[in-house]
Amino acid sequence: MIKVLIVDDHPVVRRGLKQIIEDEPDMEVAGEAKNAVECFALVRRTPCTIVVLDITLPDRNGFDVLKQLKSEHPALPVLILSVHPEDQYGLRFIKAGAAGYLMKEGAPEELVVAIRKVHAGCKYVSASLAERLVSRLGALDKPPHENLSDREFQILCMIAAGKSLKGIADKLCISEKTVSTYRRRILEKMKMSTNSDLIHYALENHLV
Image 1 (cartoon, rainbow, N blue to C red):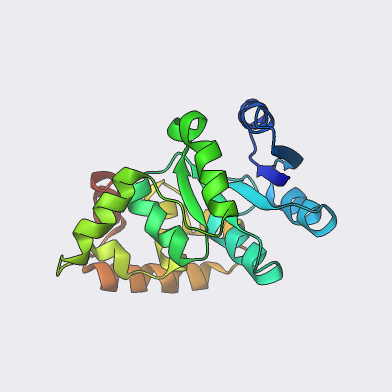
Image 2: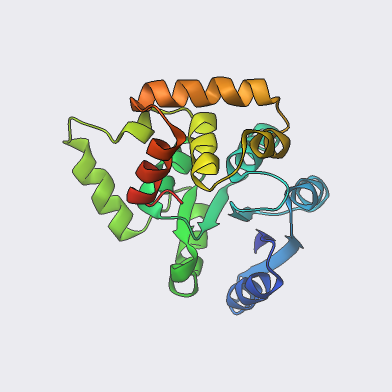
């Protein structure tokens, strides 16, 4: 039996995912969590085969949750479920240790396929993302944001979403000075000068 832990802060989404999963004779939902704290607690006490993780949680960023899960339970596959564009986020999460990346809009048709593939020890990406990844193999130039570390990319997206340095610091539990340092590095790597440049770039590349 494939035991799935669903982590999503929207009850309606969790209910829909649960129905899809439990319609399969060899799958069941082992537990549900609405935030990172509940997720970590459930994984520690509940036997599960796969975690289906929404990356937009109220208390922790998806990158941080994924990294902690892989640190504490390296053999536990994590399938990312997200509204964010797969061509911008998918590869980054796969590199960070995710077993797969699935857009929420494709969940009803693809979720069961993705769970089975991940359970079999394979990586899961959609056919369209796989095509993009293959086409990029021959490309000499990468988009500037792909040169950022995961934390820098995270802060870029938060700046582009309109969060203040203090707001970012509070959310990530770091100091404003540290956020300023990251911002400076981001601007240097992106060869930009202002937050407006970052916001324009993020919107143009569908990062927010």
